[in-house]
Every structure is written in C-alpha cells, then in structure tokens.
Amino acid sequence: MKYFRKMIGPKCYLSPISLDDTERYTEWVNDMEIGQFMLFSATVFDLDREREALQKLMKDTVSFAIVENDTNKAVGNSGLFGISEIHRHAEFGCFIGDKSYWNRGFGTEATALTLDYGFNVLNLKNIFLHVVEYNRRAIRCYEKVGFKLVGKHRKYIFMAGEYHDILIYDILASEFESPYVNKLFAQSTSEDAGRGKISIEP
Ligand SMILES: CC(C)(COP(=O)(O)OP(=O)(O)OC[C@H]1O[C@@H](n2cnc3c(N)ncnc32)[C@H](O)[C@@H]1OP(=O)(O)O)[C@@H](O)C(=O)NCCC(=O)NCCS
Image (cartoon, rainbow, N blue to C red; front, side, top):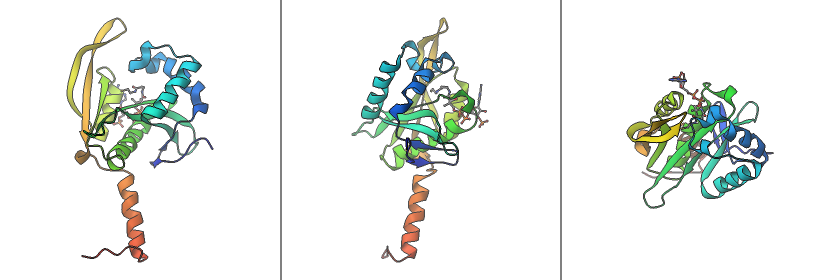
C-alpha cells in the first residue's frame, strides 16, 4: 500500500507523500509546461535532489500527494508551509503534475481538502498563497474555493524574458465551508448520539 486516505473528496483524496514517487516528481518539477507557473522552475532537480526536496517537504511542512479515487494514482501535490504556531497562518501551494488531469476539477477539490485540513484540523486562521499573474487557471481554481485577492508583489519574478507580478490571495477560516471534516464529525457524532453513546445535557 503506497497511499493512505487522509482527506477524502468525490474525485480524489489527500495522502502522505510516498518516496516511491520520486521519479514521477522529478519528471513533473523539470517540466517547463508546469514550471512556468512555479517558483521552483529556476532549479534543476535530478533524482537525488528531488528525493532530498521531498524528504524536506515531508519533515518541515504539511504536504500531501493528491491521489485519484478511482485509480489510486498520484496526480499531484498540495501542502501548507511555514505554519505559524503563534499567529495561526500558513502558505498554501499545489500543483497537478499529471497534465492529463488539468481542468478536471482535481486542483479545486485538492485545494478545498487541504484548506479543510488547515482550518478544521490544524486550527489555522488565515491561509494565503502566491500566484503569478498570468496563471489564469490557478487563479480561477483558487477563487472558486474562496481565496480573495489582497495584494501583489510588482515585477517580482522573471519568466520568458520579462518580469511579472505575483498576486497574493488569502482566505480566513470564517470564510471557508468545510467539504469533509466538519460533515464527517457531524455525521459520526450524531450516529453516536443515536446509539446512546453521547448524551448532551442542556
Ligand atoms: C493550477 C492547477 C492546480 C489547477 O488545477 P486544475 O485541476 O487544473 O483546475 P480545476 O479544473 O479545478 O479548475 C480550473 C478552472 O480554471 C478554468 N480555466 C482553465 N484555463 C483557464 C484560463 N486560461 N483562464 C481562465 N480560466 C481558466 C477552468 O475552466 C476551471 O474553471 P471552471 O470549473 O469554472 O470551468 C493545475 O492546473 C496545475 O497544477 N497547473 C500547473 C502548475 C500550477 O499552475 N500550479 C499552481 C501554482 S500557484
């Protein structure tokens, strides 16, 4: 068993990352069709470097493989970085590495599941992200989940011979509707109450 169902949606689930996928990740992070949208595109990853990067991700961040329900195939990665224990904020990042899965709703669903984990399990208050201004697909995906534009870094990254702005989006816990954790909790507690395991006195 390579993947484990941590957060489950209709199309995909979030699982711990498997180092068995290092080769697949190495292919994804070197693919400039993906890299043109990512800040890591200026780094050249061989297998060893990518394995180290994944190990660091697994140790220092809350990162998941995005796995298709029907096939148990990993199609990408999502995570929360720089979690502040004091201020309860974190940065979100994600990519669908398997390009045949773009525009099929996986990014939106994985984003919502990661935010659900951040807000309703890790008790975060604010989750923010950075996205390059020309990444229209990602912007649409993030706005669908409820992220709001709060600012930008002007002429912040260099790509294809030009400088581009980076947009800053964020979302508060109070603005987010849980697609999984809260429903699961409500369902299991009401089942327990029905069986008399839980009695809540007025
Ligand atoms: C960005 C990414 C995570 C989005 O995931 P996805 O599964 O492809 O996206 P979804 O299908 O959930 O949603 C995409 C939305 O953008 C829309 N879209 C696609 N191309 C678009 C464009 N050029 N302009 C505007 N909207 C566009 C789609 O129609 C869809 O909206 P809809 O559901 O209202 O029709 C994924 O495409 C990806 O990883 N891309 C490469 C790396 C990357 O950009 N990572 C994010 C870095 S911030």
